[in-house]
Image (cartoon, rainbow, N blue to C red; front, side, top):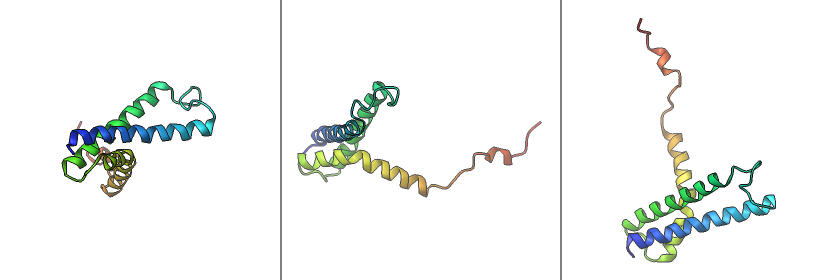
Length: 112
């Protein structure tokens, strides 16, 4: 399978992931989850859907380019899992990076 087709299947997997998240949210609040005043608004929701789908497509395309995607079902599954996996990896990466103090500039002498 070429990485382009895998990326499209990953895009579909990301959309499936977002659809499931939407269904859970709609059941919990008994309505449209992005409606104001409690929700963030439709623009924010649409941006989140687009970003999650792009993340899914990019990750699936990269994995397929490496040769680890034998068929469409695997590409769909990678796309559905990609936003969650990337989020977890970003948390781990931030935990490993050294901490930098915000007041680091105060340690330097003032030039007058």
